[in-house]
Image (cartoon, rainbow, N blue to C red; front, side, top):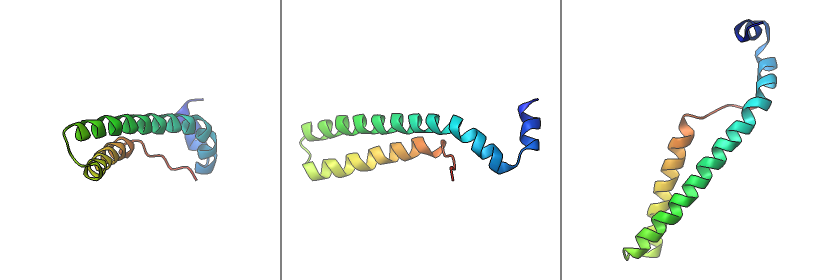
Length: 83
């Protein structure tokens, strides 16, 4: 039985239940990767800003904004809906 014929025979809720165990761990791995990358970038950018002589609060704000934007962009193409 091909995946396409399997999908046509199953109700959406059954497909959701059967796909969720396969998809969810990979989704969590992707989120963990994006989180780690954002944290590493935040640390590096904060160190660079502080070494340039920028104020702490200003550096934290700009680094937070930049890293959150990168995280959001990384998540944008990887959205799944798990109910």
